[in-house]
Image 1 (cartoon, one colour):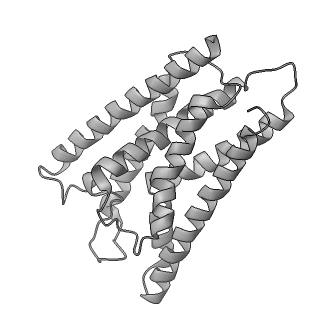
Image 2 (image 1 turned 180 degrees about the vertical axis):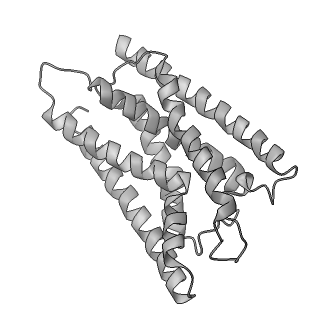
Length: 225
């Protein structure tokens, strides 16, 4: 497993990169063909939590592969900084998979045409790769429970960014004077407006904390074993 797993991580990183490029290419091409604002379209694309978490996962998996090859034979566990990064990214990807497959599957997202195979990679296969990495990757290091705050920091920042940017961004596809990456964050669609959106945010925050705690627990368990 020690020799094989870096190649699994590298293959996963390459697959994620290919999926992101494929979807980005179709999205930008659609914007050009329909004379939409390409700059806004590109920023909107990069504003999806799915895209950001997948890009983080891609980098993390690639870095993890190279760290495995460079790790001294006397060191059996991954560096603590990488363990913290991996725990965070694993949490984001698992939550991405859960949210998409429970709330968003079959719902058209505001990015133009969706590439089916890329969509499955980003929302199903990549989260499963990170879950498998959590379960079996060699060298897993246990972390303190305080790391749950580190895990939660990025999603909090992303929600703040999304809610600030949403009302001041024109949707290049529909022309509406607002743009939100997901329907459950759009106060114009959610019953109750921002109050309803707050309910969804609280629910997803609970999911992130719960999944993050599970990731930390499993890492500590494997480290002790």
